[in-house]
Image 1 (cartoon, rainbow, N blue to C red):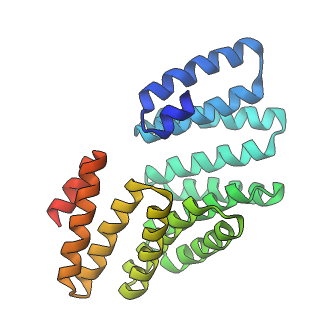
Image 2 (cartoon, rainbow, N blue to C red; image 1 turned 180 degrees about the vertical axis):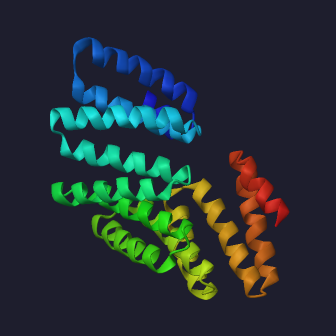
Length: 240
């Protein structure tokens, strides 16, 4: 129930279920389940912007993973910590955690985790405006995502590559990546990502002076934002 509510964006309800699950895991002494539930709790708090609580949960998850010798979980916990610190703008610490996570993901052969960590590293370096480094990590992530058939991650990484090339002023290349990402978002029914990428396309077309396309893409993005109740994206589309 917790994961279902988390996936639906009902984070407060998800936390309630995770807390119940955590209490049971501790009562029966199941350290493996305890660690995984702490990781889920951390992700829910992260989504709510409660980063201090998220870090606390992920640190406890990391301690348990190391205590029981679960290397895969250790790698996931480190990756989660890296993502939270990056959201806080503490990129040096975030990247350090992600690099540790990447090393473990590769050692244990967790390709799905490797895709996500490489993508997170790419996004971190984009935030630092080190775009060449970012593109290198994102291209590695994209290659593995395609190799293992992870369409969701593929769409996310294509969008991130678009952002990197947009920041470098290579707008046509950015548009090409955004269009690939948009096609995947439509294919898998990810309306939030679809709306977000439509906004990116509108922005890039604005930089090359194709204003009718700007209006078209922003209007499509606005319609989706209103449909799914994404007030932040709706406001952004209206401003643009």
